[in-house]
Length: 256
Ligand code: NDP
Ligand code: 8X3
Image (cartoon, rainbow, N blue to C red; front, side, top):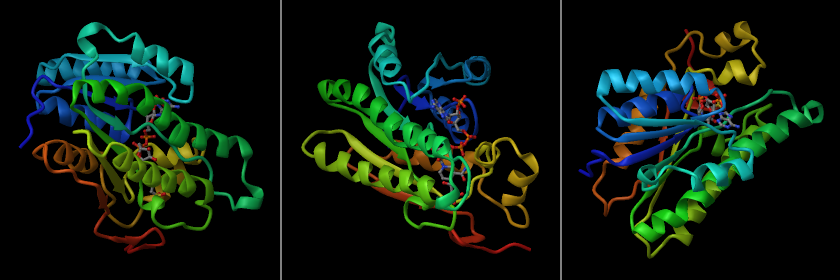
């Protein structure tokens, strides 16, 4: 097993859901946690929780991954003792809307493409050269079952997650011959703030998404991410699709 004790794990989008659980799960393994999100007050609070519960040192900072200049500045400006990132979890992302394509909001499309695809690229581009120079590192991209199967109204969100799958495969090709590992963890339905964000704050509509079956929780995905990261260094989990037992595909969920 690869120990992450005192190693730096960078989790993007750690202010909620899968990212928050992932920061906690790596902290429980003794890692030091670098984390970002736009809602900085939330990650500052999380940093206090990590310090209290796991005696973990963490470094939270505000970042909108859609802003390439801000991403470059944040990574280049990291304090000296926070630069040696061992694991990058590209988690920051969102869905917006579920309208059929002819009626979709262009602003929703842009937000998803900018965060899920361009943001992931900006962060990865800023972090990878350091990993290559140090001769160690692991990039874990959060894809989705939506990156394997399209569902009605999923159009642009699905396209961004297909892109995450393509970019994960591309990273493995382009990094072949280096010791850097690249994994994609692709969840099915996880109950987080995801649907609340997708439906622009409509809590009733969001709750319906998870009614009548047991969805995954963010801790289930954090567990899968940590498992990938702690395999021995000669083992690279290329991709892992994790679904609730009640879910067979994006369009088939058994509800009571
Ligand atoms: P949440 O809405 O609970 O969390 C999303 C996180 O991403 C928040 O911390 C949010 O922080 C951050 N984020 C969003 N946009 C940006 C941005 N521009 N810059 C920085 N951070 C950003 O959703 P999940 O935890 O469910 O989603 C996490 C990832 O998992 C996403 O990539 C999503 O596509 C993927 N996923 C989710 C599934 C699900 O069913 N929930 C299934 C499959 C994949 P803040 O708003 O503070 O910036
Ligand atoms: C999130 C999973 O099926 O709700 O990526 O789009 S789904």
